[in-house]
Length: 124
Image 1 (cartoon, rainbow, N blue to C red):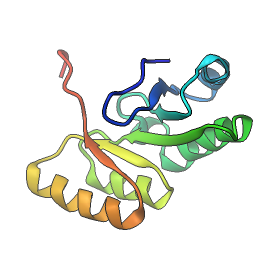
Image 2 (cartoon, rainbow, N blue to C red):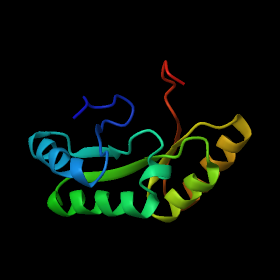
Image 3 (tube, rainbow, N blue to C red):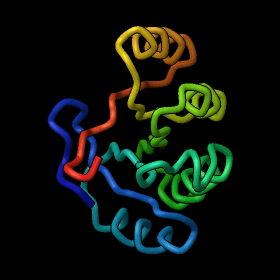
Image 4 (spheres, helix red, strand yellow):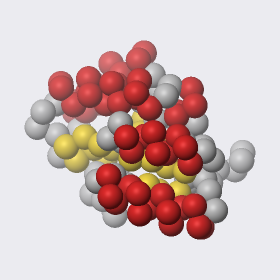
């Protein structure tokens, strides 16, 4: 588990796939934070897909009904996948231009979701 994020006051964990779900839920059992963001790996919308990732978040949430869990799907540079994430009740992280990002923010708000810009890494 990552330390709590200052802006959201939520801890963050990455779910790589079904195999990592056990490790994430074990970490959740030890995590004192009431709010946790379950994030996909980079490009998770492409490799896992929005529906599968939603199911992983739901499995974790069922094990910890006392925690507020949100799923954040990394959508690479594909706005269409961000829209699919919103339809499945997930937040999205995306690498896109300012105009598209602003439009995605409006759509996310209307859906009750959040969109963030992907964190730049040295390898990209």
